[in-house]
Length: 264
Image 1 (tube, rainbow, N blue to C red):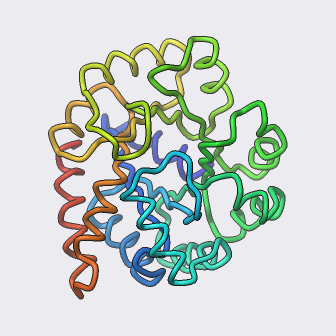
Image 2 (cartoon, rainbow, N blue to C red):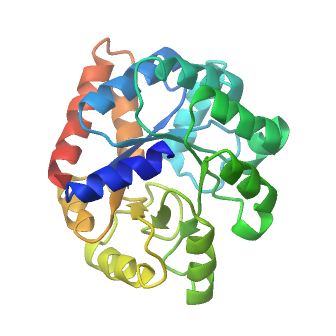
């Protein structure tokens, strides 16, 4: 069973929700990213979402764009990220999904990427600019190798589209809590809760909420309705704040721990 599916099944049996942490791979460097993944697991994070740095992202705000630039300036590549995941797999079985624009996938090729994910131990792919109807080949390749393909639902998504995107999703459904770019505004918890309840009319797959979540209070409120809460920009901002600090990993992990505890 895919590690993502296994994790959600395990959490459901315990009456718990998933905490998903996004970090940019290679920010400030791959060695630190590897250490953060292992530290986050100890802090109670359930799933890691690794951002693949790209020079022209569509859905990411200034915080994550800046982290992409820092990672690219360090020479971070998709190949090196996959090698890092392979090293992590020698120490950890925490579920890991890659979040990437389609351009790096196109350059790498879909078939080669799926095979590399299997070889390195990646569990899922999240590609914001690749809708289900254009992802049929990748979806089939990923499904054949038990790699989850995770699609989005937004506040403006109409019911027909909700049905199509939730049907195509594997692992979980990613609900974007605000329109716009990552980190653009704080999530409005009550509105999000109502939307999650509506999405659940279309699917029995886990629905996880991301974009604009940064405080323990927001995590707690949204976790009442969602099956998982995703925090990205706020964690990336904490990494940037501690840039150059030799205690970066424990400092950021302490912040993440406060968010995890709010969900529990």
